[in-house]
Image 1: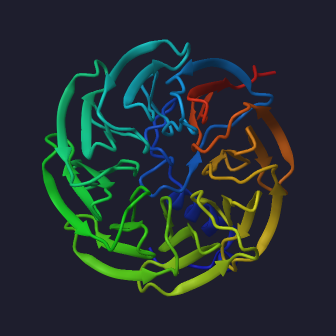
Image 2 (image 1 turned 180 degrees about the vertical axis):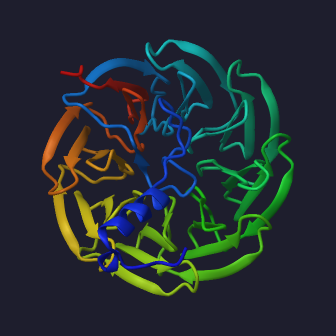
Length: 388
């Protein structure tokens, strides 16, 4: 789809655009993609009711001597189970309602990136260099694929709209992004970049787009892996990009958020006023881009012009990638130890909760539950307030 400035659309056309651009791929009660969908736009149809109440906590790992951060991966949810990994090499399946452990597996490296689902499988990359696929119900290993270096990136599952076949897309520190057959783990294609890849690979308009420490957005045909173009952004990219309506949105360490045309790589706009980098990935909803920065501020940016709409100040930097809930609320965490919910219209605070440890993960929003992982090694599940 060619990008059309939203200000030129009629109201009815804009509604059609929203339904196309932000179609929700999740089944009710699931959070099957770590950023809401294949395009990684960070959206969910779930409406939140405040105040959210802490439902349960699960300690993924204890703090070893001499270790600072105990990062956990962002969670994914399907079929009433929460799936997340952590720094000590364990990957868990937990009951969504109670937090009770269903199964766990152990690898020889940390799990940093979020998992994704394919058929009966849950798939995640590990710092031991392997991509693992387990039976989501039992935890039994079905296949694993070896790369040549650590994996920090999230897994993304792409479903071919013509055949229904599923592929796993994941980047490695061996400078490659891999497309794997979801059933067998066999490589369909790989694409080499210029340096490490930390973020997930977003899919939109028949393309897969990923960035990394080479400061370039790589655009490839998702079917074949053939490179279509490279887009220089000027600084390295620590997280996934988002794709919507023929535009790629990226935040990066050059202290900027940018929008680029998917068709020709042209810069649409660039945003940034302060000399603080962006690590958190952008969330896209209707006429705005929402993203936290290391300037301790959460930013709402006009999607057409790149102008500032509003900002909200936290007590510390924001590395947590926000999720937009029902087109009303932006939900994210901060290194100040709090999780926040802001009104999309004006940035007004609707709810906050003090966890007491930095929160870098992107929230998982599944039915009445919201799940965050924190640097204390704990997974926190919050539940919607009762309906009035």
